[in-house]
Length: 130
Image (tube, rainbow, N blue to C red):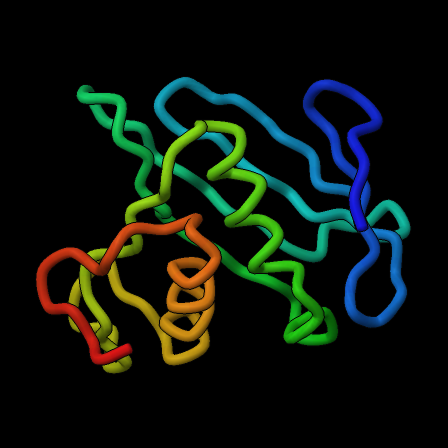
């Protein structure tokens, strides 16, 4: 369940019945989607827009106490709706963090769920098994 309260803000109820506000902050080539609960930031997705207007999921983080409640997926869905395009996931699945654009196992699971929902493209480069 979600509703838009302002042009750049949305409120939804997560899987733990908490009211989460998603705020959109534009910042040049980066746009941020911020999850807020009780006045505190509990999650953030940054999306980089390249010169060809392609939306790349750059960084996503949800506080440990708020994970697995649908917040990360809602951030990705909100960004996809905002740009009216699927997001491109980070470039590599690399749990050893050997490069600057990596995904953790939890991030990989989130992006696979986003692909199934139609909010993210296939993985670029080394595509992990879905």
